[in-house]
Length: 37
Image 1: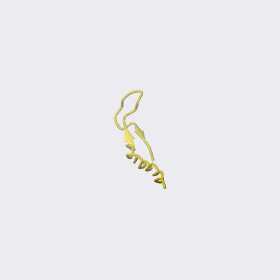
Image 2: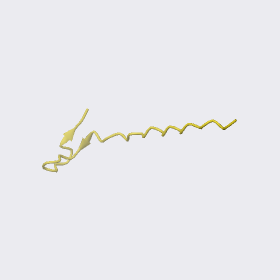
Image 3: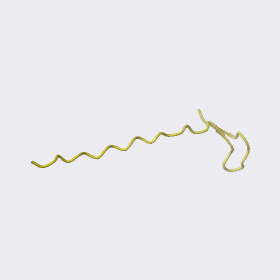
Image 4: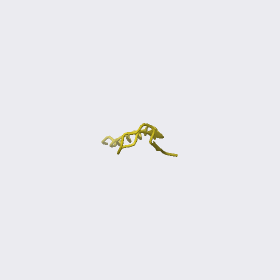
């Protein structure tokens, strides 16, 4: 009897790094111009 085919291992989920909640404005580049909640 032949060997059973082994299943491919699932790739681990990529962990998303937390994004900054305060950053400079992309238009005028003013520091701490944009806040996210």
